[in-house]
Length: 402
Image (cartoon, rainbow, N blue to C red; front, side, top):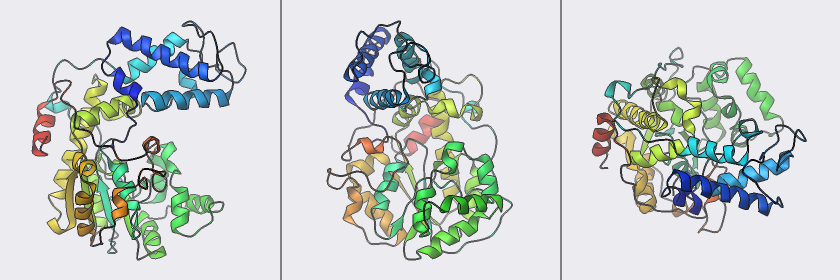
């Protein structure tokens, strides 16, 4: 299963030229609006009003916008738009913006090696050297590489707690985390953390904010999680940990007995997913100027995986394992057994079917916004190269067997 929903529309769009795509997306918008009871959709009509009741538009209220947005994102396999991004656009402008965002022009030349890195450096938690010796696991991987699927599978095990992205382990304290984490991720973990600590969800947010005000060391938070259920192993999946090598070093020194699971995905599939979900729009400051969205995705793939490989070269073999996303979806039992052996836990067959034999929702609140659109794990072959990647990407992919 991919971390994005490959709807019929999304797959069909891949094979169309630019003019065919905009016609197809226009027809899709017209179809969705028709299902919502909106007739006579013209290309020059405004789709969404800028505010409730502000101006003449096909959709004027917030509930209507939410319904349209959900249907459109499900059909196309893209992240939903914010209202301010699409307000006052005509149907034609809306369709063109979607295509420009999700299907930009391919690069014509390989990415130079010197641009295949992130700008800046980590070391956000270097000031706190407190060493923790309780058992813990970390899933490391580039975004759009199957980390959420793997986390969801692990969460099916009765002896594993694999929450949504904690984004804590590389910070020194909770005050630093609150200042540097993306606002949308700052409190996304409250429900799961409250449940782990057996706290009321109504009162826990104030406790969490007190941790931030008091600059509580993150090591104390992890110890609270451990002591709340010492027989249930914490497995922390946060792709942000491998943006900078220095942060992985901090985590390695802080958690002396940690086990590490590295998951990797075919770079071309990861890059396509990265672009289609418009992730480059939230991370432009990490890249050299002038890179295309596809090249930004390439930097993500190379930088994350290079940092992880360099870090894991310092970790003993008995505390690490690597798997490919494609192997996980084609033979989940084999790959999950390997992980359970690493974690010193018995394999649980439930892990291979996080959707409950294809009939139920995905296990326990996955953080990926699209994972609940599936009913079962889907096995797809990796896509072929669709633009010329740079030398570092090509060499690293070959090392992984791609």
